[in-house]
Each structure stands twice: as C-alpha cells, then as structure tokens.
Image (cartoon, rainbow over all chains, first blue to last red; front, side):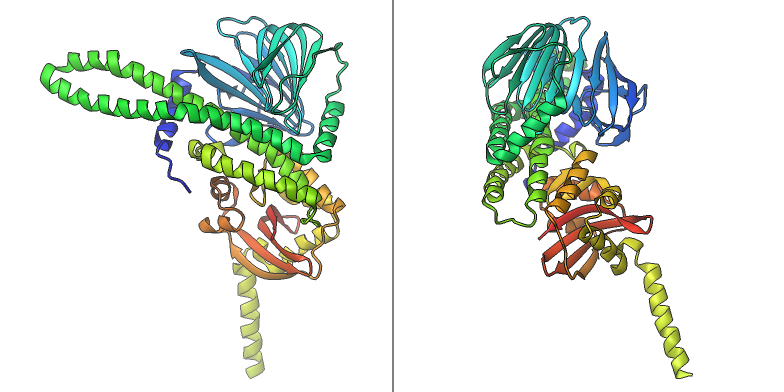
Length: 342
Length: 149
C-alpha cells in the first residue's frame, strides 16, 4: 500500500473544518423505520429526531426507512427508503458551496429561499444547480439519475452539457452521458420503483456498458483530483517554508512583525491550501460513494447471480472492467481517504 | 482405574476445548451456517448476516443488498456439498489479506469485526469457501463475510 503523506493534514482538516467552515445547521426532524447516520467521524448510529448533521455526514435509510432533514433557513429534504444521502461542501471561486449528494435512492428537496450561493445537488451521473426550487432526485442502481422539478428552475449538467428544467419537467441522465431530452411530467406521475426496475433490467442486459459509465464518472473525479494535486502539494510546502520564517522574524523584529507577517502572508495561503484539500476530499469522497454504492452493488449482483458459473462470458467481461476501475480507484483515490471514510 | 483416568482426561479435553473455543469458531456451528446455505434458507441467513458485510473485497452497507445477495445465491443454486472445515483461525489484524489486500478491507477488519471472530475455510466438492463468523444468535454464529475461492 502506498504511503500517504497528506493523511495527517487531512485528518487535521477533518477536525477543524466543522468549526471553521460550516455554519449551516441541519437536523433530523422526522424518522420512520430504519434510518442510520454515518458521521464524518466514521461512526454509524441509528438516527433520532433532533440529531444534528454536519457536512460530511450521510443519511442511510433501510427498505422501510424514511427521514426528513431540515437545514436552515428553511430547506427540507425528504429521504425515501433505500437511499444514501450526504451533506457535502466544496470550494468554488473562493466561496463555500453546499453540495447535497444523493448517491442512491430518492430525495425530495424543497428550498424555501435561496440566499447567497445556490446549493448544488449531485448524483453519480449529474450535477444540478437550483433556484428557489422544489424538486425530486432519483439515483438508480446503475448510476443513472432522474430529476423532476415541481417549482422553480433547475439546471442539470453532465458531461459538459446542461439542460434547464422548469416546473413539471424532468430529465434522465445515464452515467457518463450528457442529459437526455427533457420531458413533461405531472405531479406523482413518476413511479421511482418502476424507473429503478427498468434501470436494473438495463444493467442486467448489458452490465459492461453500465460499468463503463461508472468508469467514465470515476475518471472524471480522478481527473479533478489530479488537476488539484500539484498546486496543493506546492502550497503545502510553501506554508511549511513560510512558517519556518516566523521564528527568525520574531527574533529579529519582534512579536508584532511575526503576527503581521502571519496574517498577511501565511494565513491566506493556509486558507487556500485548506480549500484545495477540501476539494480533493470532495472528489475522493464522491469517488468512494460511486465505488461503494454503485460499482459495489453491481459487483454484488453479478457475483451472486453468477456464483456457480464464474466462467460465463458476461460475468468475466464485467469483471475485467470492474478490476480496471478498482485498480484506478486504489491508485488515485485511496491515498486521499482516511479510515473514518470507510 | 486406568479406564477412569482416560475418561477423565477425555472429558477434560472435550470440556476445556468447548470452554475455550468461542461459539463461532466451533466446527459444528460453522457447519450449521453451511447447512443454511445448502438449504437455501435465505431468511435465516439474512437475519444472521451483519451490516456492514464483506463479500470478497466489497463492503455491503445496505440491508436490502444483503437480502439481494442471499436471494441471488439461492436462485443461482449455490451449494457447498460434502463440506469439511479445513481451517479455523481467529480474524487477526493481518488476516484481512485473505479476502483482499485493500485499505478498505483492512479498515473493515479493524473497525467492524468483533473481537472473537473467526475465518473458517470450508472445502467441498464444489470448491473452497471462506466465512467470517463471530458472536451468536439463537444457536447460530453471526455472519460478517463470505468469499468463494
């Protein structure tokens, strides 16, 4: 296994970020059936009404589980059964951007008033920006997504292409593909379980194609990590170098000069570096969710259904792609994960 | 007199081995789980299986996926005919590599397996299988992982 020199820094960042960066407060306001929270610390507990959630925490509902989460000011997220829903955050243009990630299952989201930066909703196949909106997001077991808008406006982006949805419009996005044609939809017309069954049939008809879609998405996350990494490493080493200068400066020019130099030169660099680390973590965690809840499920289905015929061509072709994805994940993503993520 | 001594020694061996080997590590109990697999008793297998669950190198986190797993095994007619427990060993820190040598499986080992858990290697006419077992529930060991070699 590779040695990861970033891990102490990441661990420190994990501890500090909730205090320094996240101000919004989300809490569980309703639960029914089996609902768990997997905290960013790595612990997993049964969710109780009143539990507070922070960025990095994941709500996991069982087959009969439902949860409602309220996030200030008045945003409400209704999490359906068999859903994996994570509150995340990423830095964009020097500002924090709230990200709501539905990896699997379905979440209905209601944004009463969008103040400041708009939240972003992600699934394994798309990104949606919202403007004062009520919408439902479905994430299927092959990584496909379905977005249905009830109020407001939503821009769905995937593979560099965007589709703007208005009320009573929806769009489907397959993993690794741009959004499909948008379609009209009436309230309650879409049955998620029927759509999910169709996606499952599509996966079973061509598991290699579905796995290739996952691979494309994973490669996108890896590409983002790779593009951030050199600057992050450089900044981290600059912070270290600059910090060394502080003691010398204090000896020569006193404490005030030290504090001034820190505020002016080092602190902005530290903030920039921590934002970079936050974004690397965001992409690494998104890749982990994709690997765990989409690719992992695909593997589980294929392995269990073909357990008595491992020589079957459909199975072995799938396994070839699966192994390739796992190798890339191990090499490029795992170095940015910590034990608490697992 | 000699016979009485031998009986005492035999009784002591049997008694102490039962007392020292935890429930999940005992051959008879391991074979009870194998029997559930052979009979396709998915309901009981699901109830004995723990979340998270390890399938080869994959960590299963969702309850519904565990149901799919055992149901699919049953529908694929997975059988472990003429099973023999070839090896039982405690799930020690380094033994995760027998499932997969990834960081995820290493963490699963450290974080999710109870102290007295065992890896049982079962040989059969249908190949070799690994089970991770620990604890007990209604006369059966709990299942934490499965791998077909």
